[in-house]
Amino acid sequence: MLTAQARYATLQAMGGRVWVPRYQLPGAAPSRLCDWPEPETRPHGRERLLSVAHESAVSTPPEPAVVSSPPPTDRFSAPVVEATAPAQADLQPAPSVAPVITTPLQLDVWLLANHWQLVVGSQAMSETEIRLLQSLLTALADQPLGVISRYAFAWPIAGVPLAQGDEQEKNASLRAFLCGACFMQARIPGLLVLDAEAAALLAHQDPRLPALPPVYSLPHPAQMLADPAIKQHFWQQAGDSGLRAHFASSPVIL
Image 1 (cartoon, rainbow, N blue to C red):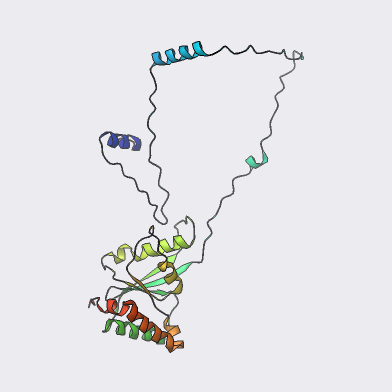
Image 2 (image 1 turned 180 degrees about the horizontal axis):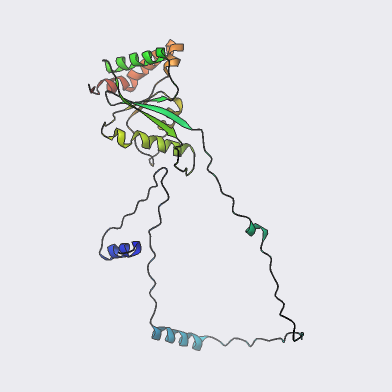
């Protein structure tokens, strides 16, 4: 069985394309560097002898060194060896830098009957808020709209080590979850986000993060119940941004 270095050398000699992953997935262990160095070409023995003879012929002889005789000591005394004490810094282990973990994030992701994702906070909503949300979704879809499935997202994930623990890593984890295998067959046409923190994260555009369908931020039902002007402003904004037309054009899976 060939080793990894032998396999890469064989593929390179055959003209094959050697591919290794260059992007570290969130929570994955760092990949090993596979750029193997080129083997050194050592000259033959005769060439080494000729090079050594040439260098000795052109080099100037060194000046004779003055050797001073050591002071007389007792013939039975042991040689004195100066012991150098190790530095105090070498005795102390290097401090481990722990990642600065930002605030945790917990969300509920609902897959609607028209395959849209509804991202809400993990806090439970009252019956009045749920009825208002159902009425708003029915008005957007021009027909009654149900929920196919419900998923829970939590960050940090238990048992998964953090690389940085910052907002970018949280954003990458959330985007990876929304593009995960459980939503791949649904072909998500868009996202409705009710959580303010999640909306701020998903609004941050970064080409290194997974791309998402169009994301629309919605006010929380509690805010619309407290101030009807917020609901009126959202309905007007939904028409101007194209949310109402996009949401109504998505077919409902009965």
